[in-house]
Length: 161
Picture (tube, rainbow, N blue to C red):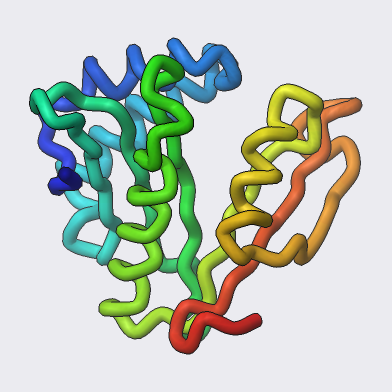
């Protein structure tokens, strides 16, 4: 089941993101700020946060997306994370489909996702390719020396790029 994220979810989502062992401490801090801003104001500007639950009602993942400023109906998926103990069971795919559907209902035409080009993110990059995304750009050394940015894109208004 996927439902809107609530303020009470924040501590669990921060712990989940940390448990993935891919996010740096400053990224966990940024997530805390993003969720606080979402609950305070950004939900009113079209941002969306979704929390995935397993059959017992435990939080197993989350996604966060928002319209990209100064674009014509382009959206960005800022966060997608699944508890490592629940990866490989379709929760990530369900969250990604939820994000795509949400963007589509908001009249989006394009959904972008950025991630790191480091080896630890290789499964993540494969996940996006398998979900029909196209690698649209690579910026070497974007996040830090040796840590580039990879941007994936997918048309969500008609499923084509």
